[in-house]
Image (cartoon, rainbow, N blue to C red; front, side):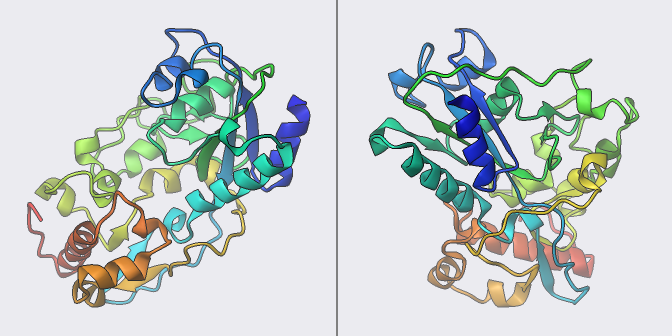
Length: 301
């Protein structure tokens, strides 16, 4: 049954699928599922989870070098989060049983990284991202609880803490060298207070000048560390989806002129319309991109 479920997930367009068996107390996977994150039935001794990766790939439109245009990172140009959920919903229907017996986890309060590592979906990279064998780190991770027990898959085998980074310079890997703000430490962790993506996601009210001066033309998303990763350089086909389409770049001044209701309507159903990124954060990002273009960096935007 395990092979059939993983096979069905791959047939549904996921580029990776693994099973996470009941986990022992004290492990990273178990801590990720401590209440109140999930109901008690999903803790130690619970039925298994299906952990999947959906590729967004690297075969995307290149933004034009036009003045006043803010770039949207490839992973946000379609709503791959919603697409992953939709595909898991279809798989759930095929498996049968009560809808309440399943829970889909994608961009949820449950951290997906421990699930991906514990199930062997991929290995941790020096840039702090999960690197999968099929699509590098250019993936969305999603999981679904299963109402029956299955034998689980183990972590990906390999020597050292970063088996997929073995060919890179240990002192200064490409991802670390490429980060414009020095947020990538090279030890599998990030200095979030330096990470452009952290601020672009609206995590902080103010952006320090040391980050603002490296902002560039970004409206949303920084992929510098991923662009430099050797695992992401080969052609990787992303999953097809029509959900939440956005262009490669948008007119920044047009966005700044729009009201809150107009921005909410513009980005409804897209990755930029998700709950963590409100109109204020979008405008702040747009101002930073315009300031950077003009060479007029202002702190505490």
